[in-house]
Figure 1 (tube, rainbow, N blue to C red):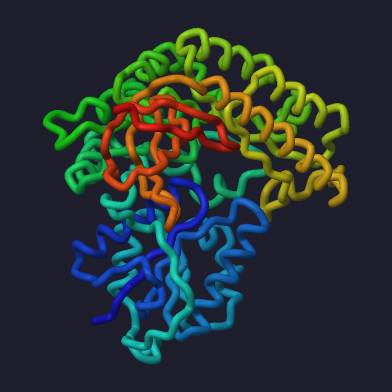
Figure 2 (cartoon, rainbow, N blue to C red):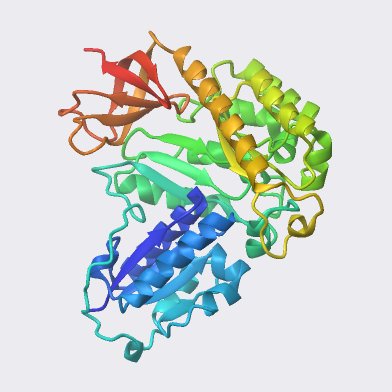
Length: 437
């Protein structure tokens, strides 16, 4: 039987789509794996958010194709830049210009076996894990709730790839979450390009808080579980803020918000076509923290956007110092094809870009360490989420704020287990915890 491997790259949504596709392929009778070295066909869900990622995707596709495997390329790359995939001069490259996992599985059914040198040709080309987790090793269940968005950010190629918002109905999302729970997964991650916009294209007045309540209150769930809400934009959060903070207080919901700021200058935000001001972002954060004092805040910034002056970059750093997010994802601007920002004047020199990203990275590292250190000495409940690094006898866990906790000497602890731990020390990006007997 022809064996099919699945690989997912990029954002949580991309990983989620890869897992959904594999599950459907299983149901359709395909023999599946997450090990490309033992497969004749590889379905790769790609990312093209920045230039470096695009180049990495193309190298991976080329490596797989040169090994004699058929490569079905799904995700953002073929949707946004089909010509880039088609330019790879290998007959076994198949761009899949589809949106739903069901379409990928249908495309699998149309594979021409004559394109494969040998269905059981299995040279080693490297392995990849993460498309479909084992509940005995990790417990995250990624549940996509929508694709596309309502934004018009001038730098975003993902918007061009996926178009306008298409939300999945509540019932479909709950069924997907329940399916993962029945398989033993316990960490339900709701994801989309902008989770805050969920439901605005559906009939009625259902919003994200309604969806989160439904997922967090599944009747007769096989075991206790947690729900994490993925990234949402400030302008999407503002209209639903009061209801959203109510769901953040639910016992099963992580007290966690991923709210990108991107820049600390109103002028740069306007160039980015972000639909909020710095003051509005600060106001949202203040209201969130007042309502949920122990909230964990993640954010994103882009360094070196076209036309960004030194003072405006410094304003971004100043804003981070004021807001003090727990985690900040730092990226240098990367011009993407067919986006408005790619043709803007005022491109930042490479040396300046590197200097700015380096300064920002040093600052956010300090902020993250300081934020974690505030929790030293606490006793908290955690859910064990995955096995630690090989040979370390550790387990990874998350507390109710979604902070990462490493538990040492954890040989008798199981993934999915709930424990009370004493937080001993903040170490870079995680807390070291000791089980309370």
